[in-house]
Image (cartoon, rainbow, N blue to C red; front, side, top):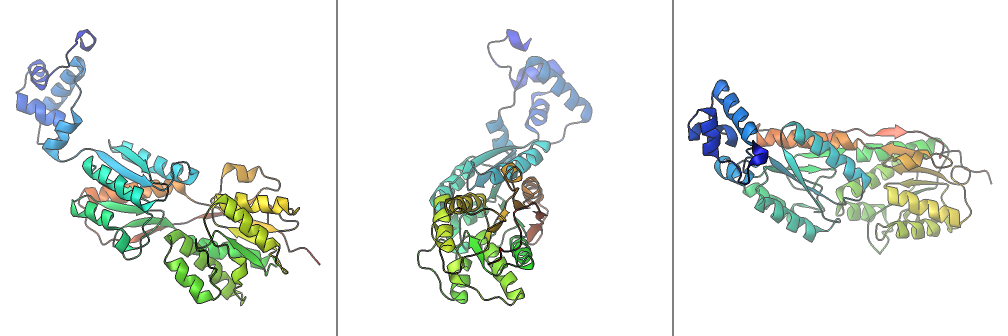
Length: 362
């Protein structure tokens, strides 16, 4: 019958077909108020028969619920965030919610604009991988909270912002990875993907201070590197830490600089995939081989790492689980389950392959 109509059926027509009053049909199709199971079944059957589709905007006006979540991520092209969004989307769809995804290119101004869009769309909650470095820069997130929209942070926390954040064990994972390089005999270990500053901090405390004022994940991974050096009683060498823009090209340039030192690194710890590829390019240009000449451990395992020669030892992040947990925490807030904000930490997995060996002799 629906295929023969040129005009969409109305609620009144659905009510007539179901033999109920218009208000009963409206409550059933709008998802609000009480309707007995018998009448609900009759209304839904009539709506399906007539081809009736609920007006989502009208429903949200009457119920205050749009059954949509907003997701703000740093880079839609990054496979890591693709996995996180997949986890959020799967968990949301299981509850009858849809997701609106906006990418900000790690730009705070774009993040502010994306938050305004989601507020205007009347989403029921927001999950954000924020570029804000502290609470002072996160006024847009507070604005959403002031509008009554629950917000959950994912992948990185924001210093001073009292919100639930779903993250991974960045510091512990980095500490463990660097400790493994030290256990293999390495004493000169380069850290690739450091603070994005032009002036290289020469003192350890200055480096820690700079890291604490940059992206949370970067600071945590750098702290893990320093923790491992401390544990082994090794001195920090500022020349073994990459600084400047976080790009594959700069990683290549910084690793080339490290490899040209009088005492170059015999191992590299790379905290993102672009840092890994930049490092590999620099090693190739210098005629150096992975493991045989320079050992390497990367952060954020991917399929290509396993087919490299030699296969790369990597830290695997639970991307799907991050997205799923973030959605679960957000739904708890949407449903009014009051709880103090906390850091929800998921664990990484160390994937040992063949890119770590003892330092070359001589």
